[in-house]
Structure formats: C-alpha cells, structure tokens
Length: 339
Image (spheres, rainbow, N blue to C red):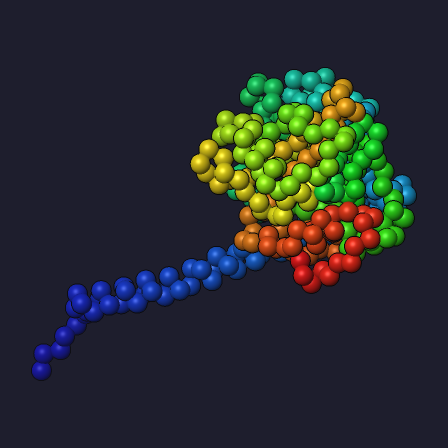
C-alpha cells in the first residue's frame, strides 16, 4: 500500500487560513489588554499626583498655584519633592522665570547633565498611550528646551485669571487654594487633574472677551476656534511641564472631554485662550480659556479628584455635570456614577 506523506497544497492553504482567522480573533484582544495596561499605568500616575497635591497641602496648608507671577512656574513643578524629584526642585529659583532654564539661558546647564531642567522627561507626567511625546527646541540651537506633560490642573469652567482673581476651579493662577474652600462641593466631587494631549493646536491672544462677557455658547466658541485656528497655527499646547500657563499645564471644562473641531476640513483637537496670564493687559482682557481635557484612551479621560481618588469621565458626560465637578464652590449635587 502506498502511504502519502506531507500535506497537499489545499490542506496547507486551509491550515494557513485557520491560523489567519485565529490571529485576527486574538489581535483585538491583545490590543485591548495592552490598552488596559496603559490605562492602569496612567491611572496610577494620576493617583500619585493627587496624593502629592494632598501632601503639599499638608505641608503648606494650601495647594500649589497653577501659575505664579514671579517665574510662571507650574503647579507640577511645585510638586516635584512629593513625587521623589526633590533634587530637581532644589535647582529651581522660584523668583526666576522658567524660560531662563532653556538651553540658551543663564540656568541652561544648572543640572550639569547637558539636558535643560525643563526638558527632563519625567515618567510621572507621561501617559503611555500618548503618541506624540518629544522634546521642544524653543531656542533653535538643536537642544530640547522643554518636554510635554500629559496631565493638567483644573482651572474651572472658563475664566482663568484677570490680574487679581483666579477662576472657579480647584487650582488657580497666582492662588493658593485651601481645602476649606471645598466645603460646599467637597473634595470628592471636585476635579483636580486630568489628561490632555500634547502638541495641541491653539489660538491665543485674540482679545475676544472682556470682564463683562459671560460664558459664551458652545457654538460661538466652536466658531471662534474654527475661525482662528488653522493647520498652520501654533501646535505647542501642552508641551511644557514647567510652565503654569493654562495652555501648557491647565484645562477648563468649557467643552466636554475629547471635543474636536473642523480645522481646515479635518476634525482635530484645538484650544483657545483669550490672553495669557502674564500679559500686561490681562486686567482689561482677562485670561479666559477653552482648553479641553483629552486622551488617547477610547471614549474617556482619566481624572483625579481633590480627595485623591481617580475615575474615568466619558466624553459623552452631560455638560452640566461636567462643569459642576470642575468648580470648587458651585454647590451642585453630583452623582459620580453618571460621569
């Protein structure tokens, strides 16, 4: 009797097809598992930043300012000792502008590592799902001067700073907020830190609003952004973890998370700021911002509340509820299970 050895071509093709089908079935599961792991890592970073904020409050009886008028430093820079980066914080002169620490500045090599302090890549500020993390060469000398942060402090709903007063959020420009100010809403119902996308397009300094202007409608602000932002606009939003400007380490709850706009025929992220915090005319043209929380996690952003807890907020969250958790003293009733 003749015995056949090996496979026929048809059998081989059938086996290959079966393997292809199995790979096709397994690949989405593997990708979902990887994204779940990345989101867990992101959640852990936000948890640590929330605990660092509370430890800062225990030390100084207040939370750090989101921006300060002396050097423009971010609240995250103030938290460095509480995320095991005290050696970096020790090199900072808070009365000196963070721009002096660029590669071409007088403090460009203060760490004596060849990397300017603002260009340090700190894992605590990086979301593993972010696809666009890279240094920024602001001085044009080929050396990175800044590095992004994927996390930002909540400034409230829209108003950020008018030269004397900060907004209604957990953190404020030139303001040291205290836990006692959260008695109406409670720290467990107030957002403190959320995710943002680095290298976001933005429009700044258009002086569209003044002290007498209320919160504009969603459609009006969407029109302002679509009109003033183009693909050629600056895309350096959220690229400097050292900077306290709302465009860099802040966000507001004007739009719900992950909102995108029609920019030159493409749907993409974009932000708006009326006037930077440190401008000389900020009293007449206050800093008001539609700087949106965004992430690369499908459908959600991770958020730290001021009690240190972390939860996800969906991009379909009701705008009233979202703005309610963005304020520290609104007195709204919030059900966190509806976020």
